[in-house]
Length: 234
Image 1 (cartoon, one colour):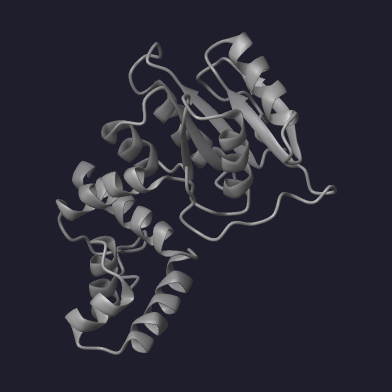
Image 2 (cartoon, helix red, strand yellow):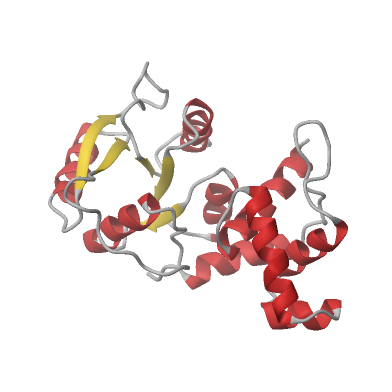
């Protein structure tokens, strides 16, 4: 497993990562709780649930939601739960634990708002590190999973990024840069395509990140994917 952005140190002792676990079985919840609290990272399990709906105030003290998705779940159950979590408390960072990290499940998870995906075939150490990195605001995916997202973006239509009133969030030039970044181009290649300097492209990206409330190219790619998904479904 490899992170897409620079690694950070484990959480400080006084700053525990508060995790809520959603799994279809009590045993699954207990095993994940025991494993995460026994990891080198400062994880505190604040609750667990076998239900596919949110209870009152169950997210009040939660930093990270770990959602275990199994092939035995009804289709769309965990994705529906994920969207409910995002609606109820947008600051909660979500991770999807998947039986099989195939293209469809990975793209669907990221387009629904997760910040990390992890397969059940990974080690306890990898999942614990995933929780820590996502808590620190990073995207967790390996190179193959990111490729799935990039390939999905490359076959989609270009979408204008707008606010709730339909006003454009970015200038035309900024939209050009977002489109090329989402296609997988690096800064040098974007600069060549648009006949700009790399320095100018970097400055544009800083402004784009600020306008969209994001902090990395990975988040920009996933943001673009989410906007295309909304446009296709709306």
